[in-house]
Image 1 (spheres, rainbow, N blue to C red):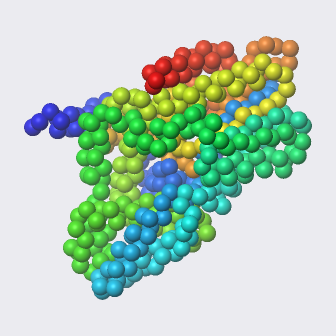
Image 2: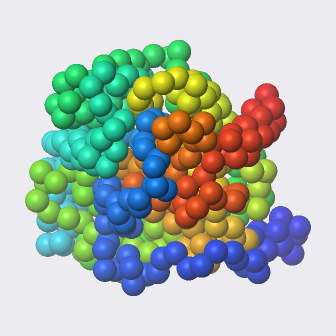
Image 3: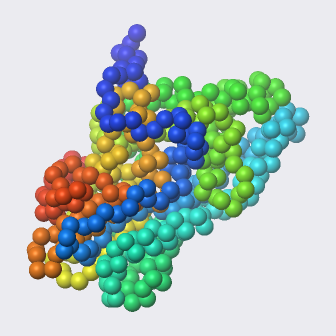
Length: 430
């Protein structure tokens, strides 16, 4: 047995796990939409905001939000699947179920035509809802004349997410002073190029790449579904069968983001098949920007510029009087590295065995559509001390240093801790 195979075996069947169990096949069976991972439609907050310490009132919000629900970034996957099934039907090789799936794919293709990667109406609604809750939970921040600075990735779905969010705020208080911008000028921190374009930027270790491929291949078992779709079990060879099955699963994941389509495709897969496909996807995201002990760890460092921008803009807000907010709109490839770099729960899981990763790290809890990180800043009149709390997807989270009380932290402690993190990330990535 060669050394690479031994390394792969260790990675897949290692011994170390940390953090309590995060999900299970039963959870995904009860709600198949969660199998979508980063396609999971934003679920909204699971808990209510806690009361700030006595006398403290919010004055500033720093925010980063992923765009809302979108169409698949390429319509080609759905078109290819449709064409394959349509050709099979012309050759008399489709079962009744196969014909149904072919017809459903035609509907998907028509809905996606010319809309690859575009924001769906649901995506707009998600950002309107987040804006509403932010406004009502922290009304002091959105007093008359408050300055709201909103910046977006240059990608259209992010710009439209920003528009939905800001239009909602403006409707709630027309006297807000809102500025919007979407420029390549800000992309260095909103979504650093390596994170946005090179989706394997952190997978520099060939052993990791090889181990992931072995794991993902083991989680792809298309044979049962092929027998359901085609009259001949061997109509497709193994590679195109695996590609078709995975494409159908990806389409099933995205259908939840297109509620105008009145059918689902998750039922094509057994609970175990859904769980397996999700595990492979979950492991990919973990390898890309999780706190994985198995590789170089550079994935989270992509967010070094973003963390520095958060610190710098907060510094300005703390030094000034009045109320304000900084809103940023980007991508999963922007927010996931930030979650890891800031060590926000539940994104701190560490595992050395991919087949048990689901126990400690779960992508749909971190980067659903419209995922967001919010920092809420508080001050007490006449007191120079500033407190803040951090929300992940509108739920309060603990930070990796001592709290002032509960989930509230001193800004001075936050800045001291995370400035070192940002410096390390930016210096090591130069």
